[in-house]
Image (cartoon, rainbow, N blue to C red):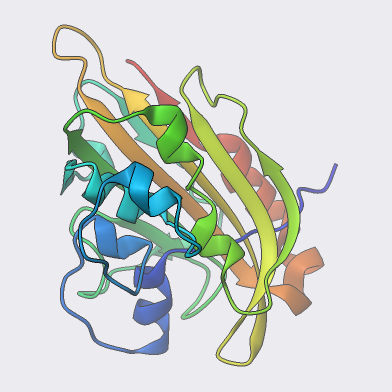
Length: 219
């Protein structure tokens, strides 16, 4: 079965591929291009403005530290690299980001892991996971899921949107994972695969391989 294609809310990837420059982002800025004056999450939730998961975590007082997936010892986070895809490196990407691309531009797949420190309601956080996707320019939702992924709480959204006048398809999943005991460290994992809408059928086999092979598990 063909996997429906993909929605990205990863600002860093878009900046990297369009040649823009920005300061190295912290975990909040991965999903949001705006900042907000800190208030309580419950108070902000009552406002008319949609809240991103980044804003929710920031306002809950949660600190995030980027960690390269291959440096984790208490959690396995990985994605496959199809034939013809290569690592993509750019100084605009958050430290520790793993990104692969086919050629010089899209399609791309990106994996980001943040070590989270601070208490928060996981279900409430994930209720904000798709906000940036849903507020992308001319966004059309194709599929969503709030089912666990690998036994961990997760939220997934697929859809299409406009980026600099080009129609894109993207798949985005956020997983709140807990590492192995005794530390049982909590992590946020973001996995995003993005391609051009008019090449969806052509790129589908590679995209399906990457999505099927995405893994988050305790070693």
